[in-house]
Length: 103
Image 1 (cartoon, rainbow, N blue to C red):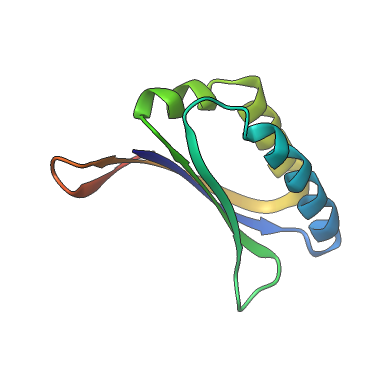
Image 2: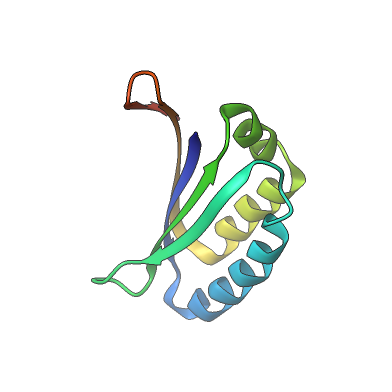
């Protein structure tokens, strides 16, 4: 399994637009082959900080998504609506039982 973890700090005045945009994009994301789960979590201490976590069947399906137009659009949205963002890629090996970061 592979994951995409995105830490987001949204501009306070763009928070509503950010949530609305992500909701609409998540509906289309369900069509991506290999997607197991996509979740958005809010930070309890800061209403403008979010964690977007996407779980993929394989590294190949995650990499295909990362090269897709849909992911490019997401990154463009983040550049406009977020003060900062950090994207991390992880490959979880069931053989080793460990997580290997790929940034």
